[in-house]
Amino acid sequence: MSITQNAARGAAWNVATSLGTRVLSVVATLALAHYLSPDEYGEVVGSVIVTQTCLTLSGMGLAPYLVVKPDSGPRVAFHVTFYTNVACLLALALVYFARDRMGLFFNVEQLGRYLPWLAVTALAESLCVVPERVLYRDLRFRQVAVTRAAGDLGFSALSVGLAMAGQGGMALVYAGVFRVLVRLCVYFVSVDWRAWIQPCPLRWSTTREIFRFGLPLHVSIVAATLSVRWDNMVFAHYFGAASMGAYNYAYSLSEMPVTQIGEQIGDVLLPSFARMSPPERRDALGRSMALLGLIVFPLAVGLASISGSLVQAIFAPKWYGVAPMLSVLAALAVTRPISYVVSAYLQSGSRVVVVSALEVSKLAILFALMVLAAPFGILAVCVAVGVAFLFQALAGLFVVTREGLPFWATLLRVGRPLLATLPMAAAVVAVRWALAAAGLRMPGVSVVIEIVAGGVVYVGAALLLAGETARELISLVRARKGQEEAS
Image (cartoon, rainbow, N blue to C red; front, top):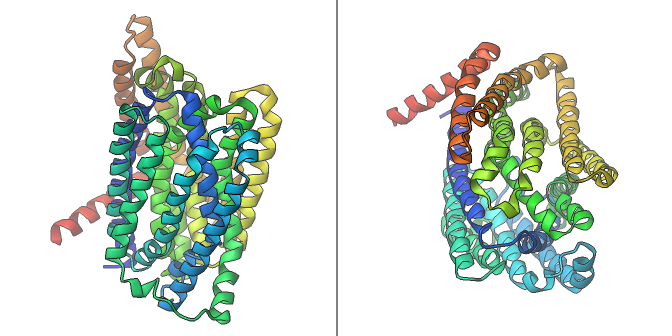
């Protein structure tokens, strides 16, 4: 099987399992809204962000080295395991001693209550990082996808059950511990311990090599994490934990089609790009962005279009404030698939400094715009978040098209699927107005009709406005189906 075919199959497994479990996770999260108040949910989210940031900071960008350098052996893997886990312990200890001041500043008063359990979760996740990257390096995408799916399914079921039993915010904490322990146990069984955790003497030459690669990339990873997590903490600082809880719901829903498809495909593209020649990578870059946009753009714009009916159908009235935020955030999330593909492309060529520069620039713009927009209210801050991601996408596209791809032609190729979403959005709005004029006040029925109408219109618009990309996607799907039947 060729690299392209293996990547397509791996992407299909990642997307299918991740999207399926994510849908169930969203259903579980929506069920939790009936048992948790916005304030309580916001407290848990804030505590999780603090500990997960420790995990990100301790990674130091070292794990991707194992994927980008497929020939790296067990000695290198142990170096990565040792340094990342020691750093994670130190980061968590520092946060524990600063927990009271951090909780007061960010309006997360229960940080001290949740922190010990969440620290266990972060340490277990730190141990999962290297064996998971070993599986990616070996192109064993299915193993990772199934393992993640099993943990996510367990988390969804356990969190709802514990919330129903009256555990409150701790339901999310206990379920998180369970999820990561599932992953850790599977990875210990699936990956030979000698391939990543067998002790060996630490060598300066190996240490220097992995840190030379990792630290510039680490700047990018930290900036990306701060931009998608600490916007919540900025939100909590200005508007309180309850408003941050509603914002987090809106953000999570808005990024579902982007993250669960775009990010999963990005995980597959990195090792695939790494095995291609530079001309092959350039050709695959434009195709990947256009194909990914054809799938993700209608999901993002469609979600923004149906947000009003959707929130009324699935949320209790205390959560109705999610709707306007969801509409803004989902519509502006269309730029993020471009960033995923660009990042994978640059990392595969070891251009991690450029990736870091893009992420740091986005982070600075994000926080600056959020602070400037805060006096104008919650929706203005949501717009500021979207504008920052738009900057990252356009800047990244400009950088990679300097290598032989025409900027405007590539932008037009990616923009055609986005243009096809405009008739879809108009159809959804028209259907909602027609139903309201007819006196139908059933949000659940309205959501179904809006989705069907939007989907039908988008298929026709995509074939008309982005026909070349649509036909290529159909050909890939048919080819993959033929491979599965042959095997």
